[in-house]
Length: 442
Image (cartoon, rainbow, N blue to C red):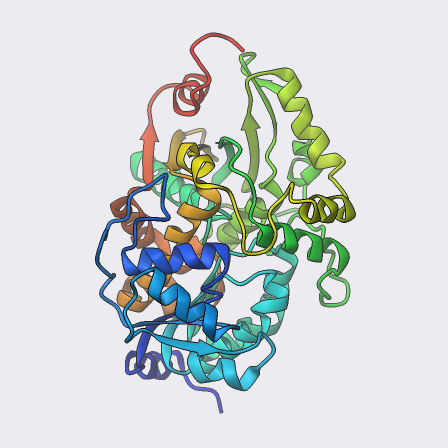
């Protein structure tokens, strides 16, 4: 017999830990642990809101190596009273032993389909909230098919894509839509075009390993489900998919109002699925559309982005570069001097069905790892500390950041230094000023 969300919430309130960090010794997991402990040392592009002091919650570390976990605990100054749990990724009993003792699991262990799949099943069954930083869309669809009903029955919120994939875009869309509706009589939202700019900050070995795994061993989905479906996570518009909804529609070079060259965003295939699911869950509009692009300084740069999307490097080439030391191995990531100068800005151009319009932006420090760590930690802390402020706890289930965590997470991220702003003026000047592309025509 499954418990009700209310009963599950009551049981969760009595648990020993507020948060357990799974995959704590990986590249991003170490940053999450440091942020929890108030260890500023590994953060070079942003400042912690709690330097030198822990976040004031009961937390534990979990992973596959006790030696590495204990070393991390010492390096980050967590304190000897911070417990460690050791379990292999397929050890259901070992994973259940810590899932049953915590309100929330913050997961950073990828490839997630390999190292966090059993974990999600245990969270769904035991009524434990779960957040992660995956960008594995097909795997997330498989979670919806397998665990959404169970999580709704137990009250567990299962919320993936809580890092740079896809919080700035999903919560940025929520921020823009909420402000547009307050400022005008806007009802349905017709479209959001996002423009993202981030200096090259490099990848971690874990992210590269996830990409290789996903390209070689596709997730097995429910029969008849197309992994390339632009609405794989939901949000199909009334009347069905349109040409503008296809990924290929973004694989082009264009000049924004004749001024700024733009090409496809490498993150469109992930973020578009998440934002479209939020539209379905939150009722943004029956004809809602989302696309994502990257403004560049030249036509050649935009054309290179098209090539990267239409002709990506094969897995064997990436593996050779990792073996030769030209790309990081699992557990390694961008160097401090690279992260120190890396920043991101996303500009969201939001249009309602009635023609009303608003431009919003989201910006912060190095996005792929430092801000990702802070974003997923804030998501987990919000569920642990303020569950009643999270709209998703009313239903449980497999939800997006916007549907699960809502405006309160925006507020917490702003308090932590991630900026959400309403912009004034036309789109090209906003992009030039916000993305640092200069005042002259490009």
